[in-house]
Image (cartoon, rainbow, N blue to C red; front, side):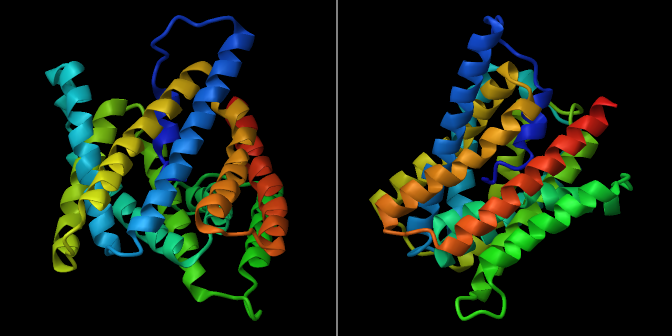
Amino acid sequence: PTHRAGAAAAAADAPASDPEPKKATAFAVGILWFFAHQLIGVGNDVIMKYTGSTLSVAQVVFLRFAFATLTMLPVMFLSGMDSFKTDRVPLHVARSVLLACGIALYCKGLAAAPIAVVTTLNFTIPLFTLVMARVFLKETVDATRWIGTLAGFAGVMVVMQPGGAAFNPAWLVVLLSAAMFASLDVLNKVFVGKESFWAMIFYTALFTTCISAVPAAMAWVTPTAAQLGLLAILGAGANLLLFCLLKSFSLVDASALAPFRYTELMWSAAVGFLVFGEIPAATTLIGAAVIIPSTLYVVWAENRKNEE
């Protein structure tokens, strides 16, 4: 989830750069690119969870986006100097503020909750997006989509167990991060297509680095060589993840990819168990069984509305 919010809107708007293979082959290759994007995202989660246990959240965010900015520079230069042109600095700053807050909360959530729980709660992003689109964009939301949204948040209650002995208030930061990523999606709904994909990625990473620099400096702990290496991989991985997403969207429609988004829970549960010894609770799986159909329905209804 990476912190993948907003990328889908930009990637879907980008044209395919390769000659289109046969339809069935294109679909299979597109799905493989999508799975690669998910696996890189889960790997990034592992790095953030590990480094966030010894470094401050602000420092992890700063170094992640500093390395992301540096690894984007060769791409920008290869694309030509025109790729640096932008007349939407306020948009990039707004995106960066939301992204910095979202990633910081997400990193904090990873430190407090199992990876499978964080992944499940981040499936609520489309639900938050629907609510925010209604409030800020004045989009019409019919009764059935409201029902799907309410059912999804009921699934959140199953995972969170408020009032129960297992309730952990620290998990609420994951929902706050989902709300931030949804805000990013709403912002992209307004501006998508008005800025090149690479410019959006580069300037968002650059401004997020600048925004997180002061809080990171205030809580700075000298990272080890191993930590720096992991965070460099995290920064490069963030860009590689977006590249894989771009490739998948160039071959397969966003609506066709929507159901495959939930395989990320399988990857995150497996990695959480293998790396951190985390076993998903029954309530997490039951909650996911409620949230996943709800968000699938909301996404399907949104696509149907756009087709009409």
